[in-house]
Length: 340
Image (cartoon, rainbow, N blue to C red; front, top):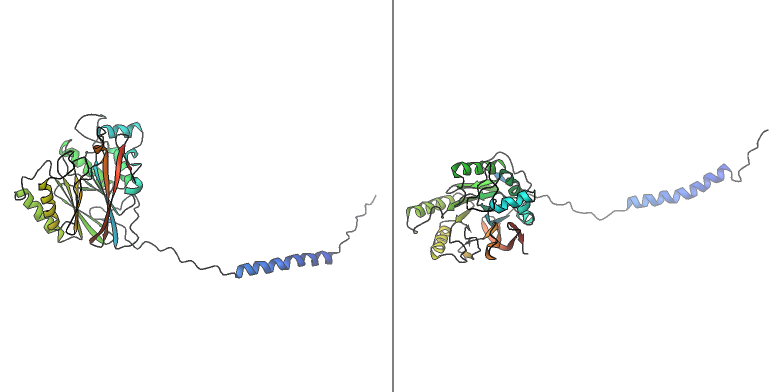
């Protein structure tokens, strides 16, 4: 039996015309949208600053560092004493995180052109885990925390860096260098260049090798080195391990010494060792931070030893433009946290 198909009520011509009636307005609408000119946006400017170069190494830092947007401006952060041994070492092991000590401050210390601190403990192989004693050391793995925090330069001129002898100091210096962190050693110049500005760092341990007065041979040698170096660099930073522990004010001899150092050409003095904060002084065209207190240290037995300050200094070319102090408070025995 043959089945006859039902004839459609619409002819092919009618269907084509209906389709065109729908399609043409749609095409016109698309063309109109394509011809619409949106407001022109300016491209995001690229950072004109050159990446920091390190005079002693052929490789750049392993962590990216944002530089100040204005190439004429450079920001330096300085912190107080950093001791990665004793209970601080125990805390890192307990939390299974070598970055633990810096988790609450790294956002700030990573964010500038140069980050500086005083490393109060040697980093050595086979460092024992202990929460007591006055012989400090840290494990090699602790370098991960220093890198994470963004440190570029660390002074190793202090009275605990030789707790494991000359060999311990050499291991520390080598490990820092291999991880693109400059060690600033006692009575030696460390150079760092960023934003076309050359910074020199000079560190002195005046606790192990104290000055008797400002006319003794050691001071005259210091003053000569500072004066000579200041003539050959854009900005000279002097780090001093000095003063009396747990005292909130510097001595008169410290003030005289600091003034002499600024008069000799230094721009900034960064003081460590008292474990408590001391005043800041603007002297001539320089800044003197007599003590920034503790940054990472297991001294929870007093409120003052759990406090410290982060100094943030803004340079315009070769001159100091401004500075700011951020207070910190140490929690969990060794973990600093910003109070701002």
